[in-house]
Length: 242
Image (cartoon, rainbow, N blue to C red; front, side):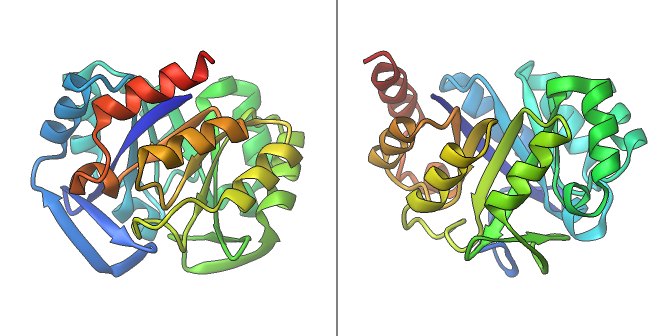
């Protein structure tokens, strides 16, 4: 299982939100690129970036910082937040991003998702962000009126091969993952699943691995020291070989 450090960017800084609430923000570092380099030095093989300003505004808003991370680390990077048209996808892949994560458009513009999957293949990932199993869009503020499981099944029909499942109520809480929700999506959707939200101990990562996820995104636990990235990488790799 792949352990992926998260870097959430707002106003050009590395921050974390509590349950996706923009009013409950903690600034951890002023320079996200320096944070990215630190995760690389500790062994990260991929980075997960969220443009929080982009998610709220509907357009990528921290492009210079994102491009700096891509160029300075040389790591595969996946980005979500405000990616809602083909021109933006082409621009982001053009600056070296490995994957782009669609959220709102997966609900609102399924035809666009199908077209992007046909053109860009597995560079297209869909983020399913759920609160009480119901999908939330537009920066996690709008109830989309569909369950995570149902949306997962629908987008697979459009050609999506990889999904990031995030439990919003667990995100940034340092509680534990929503194992029931994760298992439901892993078992019920024919796609590769990356889990996020509430991961705060190495034991959580090992349990997610056994549920069959392809990867796990870790954010606040790394910044608070609840999880040491080097240890998490070693244990998850060893567990995956058993």
